[in-house]
Picture 1 (cartoon, helix red, strand yellow):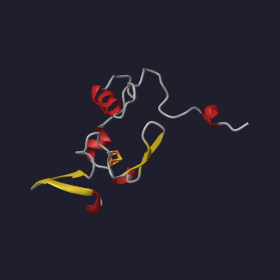
Picture 2 (spheres, helix red, strand yellow):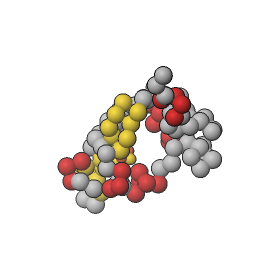
Picture 3 (tube, protein in one colour):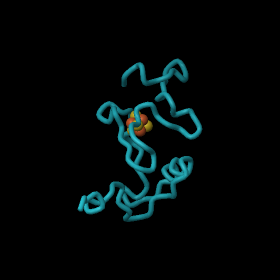
Picture 4 (tube, protein in one colour):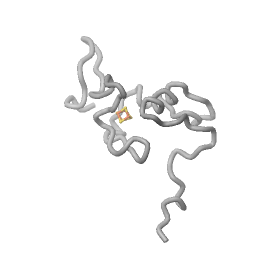
Length: 93
Ligand code: SF4
């Protein structure tokens, strides 16, 4: 985890800068929330990030995912809803 992306929250733990804001916006997040975003440190992301599944990724709801989306004015994901735009949605005529 790059040191310049975290803030010390206690003697033994750090948090990503921006994750304590309301609404949270991790410093490592690139893009526009609700449109297209990506993690700029995906291979280095922390264990909480690795353990967090978007709702329905494993067939289960995730109230924390729903709350995070709601904080940005987004509706909850629905079961079987694709997380990424379908390729044909991006097609250019
Ligand atoms: S997955 Fe990446 S962008 Fe998302 S909270 Fe973790 S470090 Fe930040």
